Image (tube, rainbow, N blue to C red):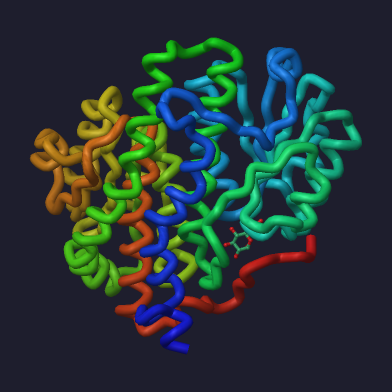
Length: 369
Ligand code: G6P
């Protein structure tokens, strides 16, 4: 068994460490050798068909849904098409407005999730084109979709998804760039800049992993708490949701992810002396606003761990403890910041003596609706 885990104590930790490879495998063959263009040969849509798309729906469950929240931001920013992200079990029943000009993107690690598959079928019935992002070649979702972007994360065994989620992020970056190239919504120079930064991610993930000890210390501290908060704005909010889910799934510590600016509209009432708050501050344009939200929770006694970016000292000054990710484009920060939150959940679960790879009541793949 240890051999299967390649010397790691748990599959989850092994899979966390496999992310640099998963990033490379998912992006390399899809980037031109000159590093200036993305080629998604698996997308059969012609340029005219892409130009005809007037809205995109991203539909998924669980962690894949959280990847879709990042996907919304990435596609809207790069391709300027309006995107909605929905959980599959809600999407089907709310009479979504789906036409031939709608592109529906279903995201599923396993490609077998019943709710996601049902949403895919509903989308096709309404005449939409369906693009799947999945980790399993030949899965039901892959077979039934019109186009498939395979994430090359490799087999994921731990119930809590790590490398599948981050490979889905890479797929969304590539897709966003592919759409932007076709629609001419970004300059070739900017596209090349994003591609250069994408290629740096695997080595940067290694650097985050090398600092796991820092995260472990904070994880040990939060493991004695029963409630905590994650806050962030923009892409940091999407990552906060995933960080909170991961922590709940395997450590059983209750947490809530909040859009930092929304705190004062309610949740601030729950901030008391000593409560841990994990504040993501990787988005430059939103930094000042995020810091003012951090001050709101600190004033009420919260103990704040900031997840920031190397070389930025503003956030550091505002928090109690800081963990910095390597410098990258704001757009790509989720692919680094989430690694620290995966480690946080892992070590918190370990400190609580839980079965990290097989959390109670959860299944890796849910094939019932
Ligand atoms: C289950 C798993 C989650 C996963 C979700 C969607 O609930 O426990 O970790 O995110 O299914 O799975 P999928 O295979 O469709 O990505």
